[in-house]
View 1 (spheres, rainbow, N blue to C red):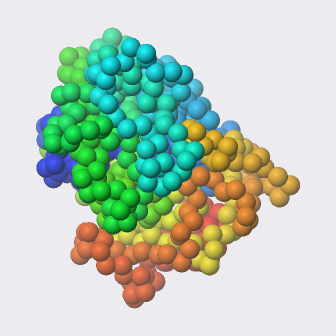
View 2 (view 1 turned 45 degrees about the horizontal axis):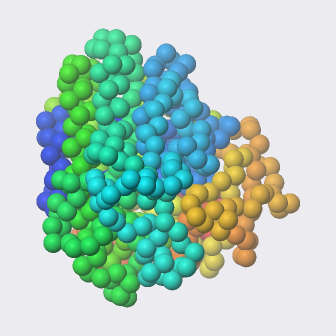
Length: 518
């Protein structure tokens, strides 16, 4: 498994993108993979998406961001009992901090490459740093301080880490891919050997969009000044004058440079598979957690808006031994299906105790051609935010109705997304006397259910602007999502589909009440 964070589907050559170069992924799609064209996000953002994949149940309806709970059984635990060697290679810092710290523990082994994004790797910059290979760049707090007026917004740990890189191969992404390729060459069983699963959780092309030459400047050679490697998270930034069009082009170009650089290093992993002769016996999945807005509809980053197509319609490429590459599959799929697929590959049970007993559907029948579809709908969203449903042709994103309550958090591992430099502002208070013990669907393990009320400090990512804001698009007729069909006759059909989907995954009743569809 190759999970590339924030991989924009519409920017890959294999999905019709022409703006940036992705030759290795394009060749993989053309020669070896099935290209899924209706693959969508489930739980967001980063850690909830990984929960979907590793635990097999949607996370966002119960909690915002957290570790594997005591009632849950990740795929790695089931594979260990089945005698499968599992290896994690990652530079993703959220996997090793509060809210993600136990996803790696059930792998047979793991290799954590230090220094990416918010990883607190160094307490000081390298005093010998002279601006190469990491070229001069604005620090991570530039937009928040200079354009939004947040005087306390500091720079990011990566701004120190990057001063220690001495070559392209020292950057976290290239280093991770080289480690993964090394494990395939030296540690993976050969063809006909014992079963294994290598999970490469690569943070690129997620920000910071930092690359050395020859990648830096490849798509914006006329830029003169410090590189803009940290994108804003904002809506309407250019229209409001908080970001110039020229700065926007620079940010988008630097994403492209990061995308092309990591594509180059993904080629090393593909080369290692060839060197060991593993293609005929090994399934290879290339996926992502979500996309990243780079000015589409003047949206930047992953701010509080519904999931438009650039963020929510994501790539999925699967090489399946015995199945011809260069083909496509239009069946509706979502990230939680990857867990069921892995379980199918290794012949272990899907899901496990916890929310919904597993919400995924294996992709194997689609890959083998024994089924034309495996699901009729897919739901996704962010905790306390919009909940969306799609049937593959229409997408309905429903916000809260009246206010954003009732809303409870269900977890025995109390966490939300950590934000470096703003820990005290986003850290959750401990559960209080309003909390009650309840039970997740399919589990007899008591869980703390903490209700929230107006005035409470709410978990990071909870929507502040979702109330009575609903969106409905006919993606076949309106792929640019320019005509909101809310209020038309078709909305009632999508409300019923959303209600059916939520009941089918045993969502808390208060979610239906919060959305006004109980």
